[in-house]
Length: 371
Image (cartoon, rainbow, N blue to C red; front, side, top):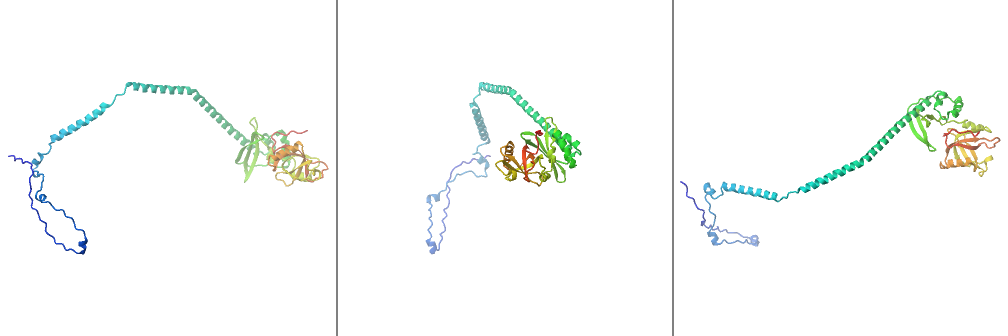
């Protein structure tokens, strides 16, 4: 039999008022000084009545659930909420506007125009690109050819220099020397009293171009030819491609030993010497007048003796010498001079400078005899 449903109602609950137990406090001076607590009195009406919301007993679960929403209500609420969400999505999508097809056509037209413009640029730049490629290829081929020629030249210079230094006779040396027609007699005279060096040519230590009077056809080549010994050569590359060695600078050729010439002073003799030239003021005997003569101190490589050369002031030779020394900051300079000792000269150290043969010890061109 079903229980009778109890109705929810409010009821008045009368509760006994519990009177507080009186407490006797013992006070002293300290407690008397403290402030007294303020107590709020409870009204009689509030002490007599207590109002509550009366619910059925919690043990009676069936009675409690009849007052809660059922599952059907919850499901209906979920379905309702879901519909609202979908409706909100649909409303947002309904608000979007369709893009007109004309925009797509316009974009396609712009892309086509850009593509056509790019192709036109490529076509117009093709000749320039081809021209640049041809120029680059030409430069590359030129550099490659020059590099191959340089390698071949270096090989020729090294081989000719090695063969010259290894030569054991004058005849073996002649094919490699400069100005062979003029120099060959000088070589025979020189080696008649000086033995030919038998060198052990080892490593190439230097190969450097040398420009003389704006003629970039000379090279300085050095080899290791013994323990702590370096032998150097001046080499000329002819227009024909032949490599020639300057024998006169290699042998330090002088027509006569400088010290012997300075001591013996053969009267009436004329020689072409490679010397160092330095301005000086040693005026004596025939050359005591500085207004008539310019004085220069003369020395030779590896020699001890010193001579003083005099040249007529204002002459072409005097001007050439002055310019040569001035270009070297008035310091000692190398040169090839034609020197004469007059007959009956009283000066023991003086000689006459007749001509400047070369402003260095190498003859760029073979000197021509005045006779």
